[in-house]
Image: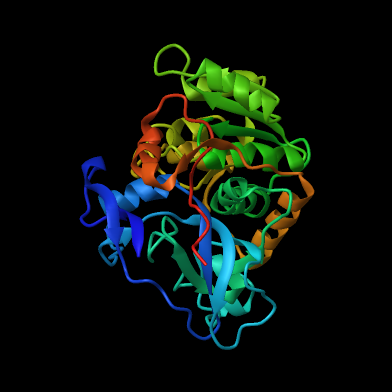
Length: 349
């Protein structure tokens, strides 16, 4: 089976189409014929090699997908061949204490499609039945593929971990990534006042169209991140700062917090090791909170909002499967805004 990924870890020069075994569903599993798949920043890290995460090679990239049910194994019910579905890329074992308590994202055996397993940039994907959901009718296959990872991440980061409530002052650091476009929408749904901090004037205009109350431009000179956010808050600080950039911005995000404020970190695209002043944390009784993916109930909640149109996927571009490498390289484009999607033709009967 042909997929897009790599045979050896490295940089962009390692990207290629690869051949992997066609998967067959086992007990409790469903095979889905992929119609659209989306890239995430996670794919860049998987390509480079994540310390402590050994993977089978050649490896297929991609954590997001939407498609149609192809077949299933024993102990599966409630599906029909050809049914349009959307996939939850978070995989848990269902047996540990966290899973039994409905806290699946804390499962010690938690895995992510395309990071720990073969990914979605190929013809067929096999996942547990609980990861396969009806696709919201209002979404096309590319729109559906753009939704799962970013919206579940945004929902947990804002609602559960960030505890965002009405009239909270929320800052989103960075404007173009798929998770950032989702966080803006989720924070507004929760009643927050949202400011987006970006380096791009063009992206500042686009986040306002998504519902952000304001956008501010920061740089490394006279307009550092903490200063522009502090001024926006009228020198009272932010209740929540969402930061996926990492080392260059987290220390400044902390300095922009109000008393009792919290920085929610879901990634570190620009570096994982930051030096912070602990005095700011304890004096303001502030906190740094980590968040990743979501529990099963949170994913179901996100799907209901997508189905109702209260949340909408932001698609940067859609590319045919044969142009998957061109699509992947779009991560380096200054005007990237939203998710990069690859579309596959229907499987032959």
